[in-house]
Length: 209
Image (cartoon, rainbow, N blue to C red; front, top):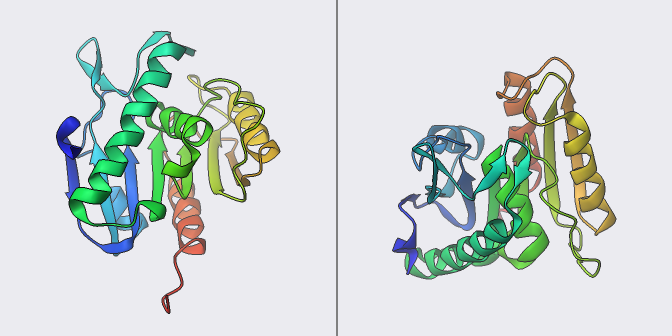
């Protein structure tokens, strides 16, 4: 039942599908050109967040800037994980080859997927994320590759929040690459895009398999 989210799907290498998760006020189309640029040949799955904040789509509710509604986030994390599984069945791509690419609000729910439903993502690029909540103690991410990209001039997500997320991911077994640009704000830079492209290239499936 992949129609539970309004979404864009573009078929590609069925072993590798990029799950695009937009920031506040974005929609299912926002990150598609970026996804094509960063992972040429990969499939693309791009849902629109269902929660509206002053008319702007988000993936979950927040109480204030930097203050997340955790029960809502957990519920919507489960819903998103079920959507990914249903889409894999509907569109015939490998559910074990889904790489999350999330920006801001989208990065936070991607982090929650890693914490709560770790089997739903084979890896994740988290751009301008915060630590949404402390992960369960028994979480084992077992070498899952994760990129965390932070900006030193980000007035929405302090770099310390992204650093703490990276520490938690690493402590639970993820293979983390932390990218920090001291001059970057909340928006993405060319350096972020280059880093993300190179990170995605480094986790491509073997062409002989």
